[in-house]
Length: 159
Image (tube, rainbow, N blue to C red; front, side):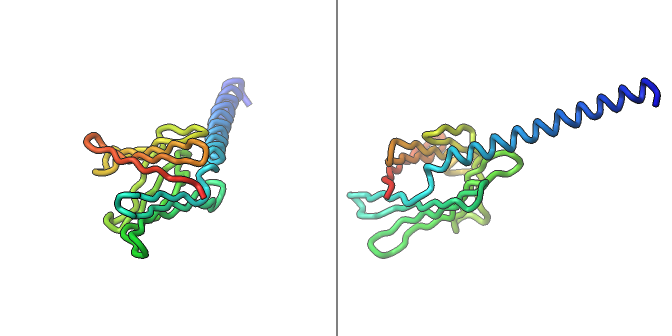
């Protein structure tokens, strides 16, 4: 093998190893982010003293890279709102997925920040909400859903 071919092979192998370890590093970060979200697993409840409605979110760990939840609002014994929720990893990025009957298909919100105490995700193309924010304070959860004109706050306690 000529010196020129040998150097070419070394460059190809170096580039391959660089991308291999880069991919491994992203996979590790996605896995670490899911560990950061373990606090979300469980039953969360909000009671509105004015409307007498009860809202819940119940999250479970489906796999290392998927959390599955359900959110619903009850008025007495009647269900007035329900949504299927997920947090998934897709192409080494995290997404919050909301599936409600008003939309033809599930809506994905890309995570833009994550900490041990919460996360923010957004979908700038969705009408409402464009942004979803979860903030943990001990066993108390504050959720904001918003767009540029409107912001709604939900307060949950963990049971």
